[in-house]
Image (cartoon, rainbow, N blue to C red; front, top):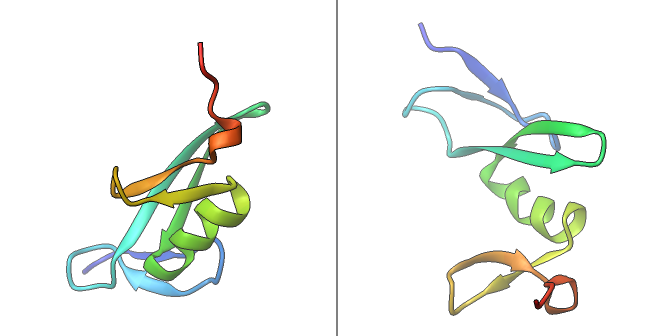
Length: 73
């Protein structure tokens, strides 16, 4: 029997195996420690945009920090 995972943003429940919808486990190292979020495919985009303030980069095909947040050494 498969385990169930709940999205931390929308509370959608999906199976933890390949028969369920796509889901993502995101780890964030913050000021107050390390946090892990379980997100469904639909909430992943808003997590990057709203929570982290990142934007989609077509050249890298992934979400990256906004240009103003990138530190250049």
